[in-house]
Image: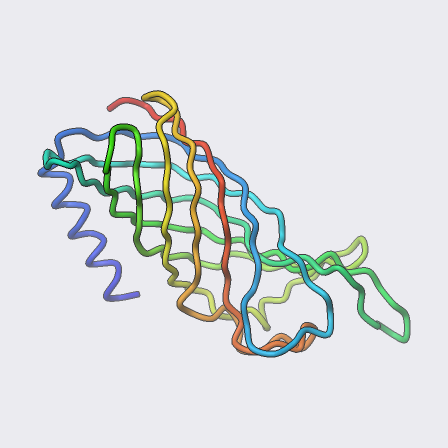
Length: 206
């Protein structure tokens, strides 16, 4: 993380000085989130339907074709959903799954091959703020299992400007760092997050 953050700050300053255009905005979307890992789960799992929102600040350069830089501080829910239950005190109990609440900061380098179309790629730094295991109608923290607080991941996405003030986008993200070494309930090792995201961004002209 110490090498990523100075790089992010340098890129932000360079684009701030050289940008021809910039805008702010708000972004909200829908995630399909899951864990990838080693091992086979004792519990059948499925993607978690989750959500995200962020503040957006974007620069666009004077080059032809235009290049850009976008930063998106915000919130993302990750995790997985369980299709089956588990045995607790000799009784099968329903479990809805894991929920991992992240404060996230994607830093995306943008390329505009044609008008209104943007391709983005870059790192995302995230901090795991809260964890939950949903069992029946109760919740409990699983922070002792999911104890890797900082996460570094990579993002690639594409978006289209429906008009100047609204973008529709699709994005894929996969973590480079593990969120847990071992989950005894799932019987999995070296777990890390992945998600597919669909979103709308509403721009405010700067």
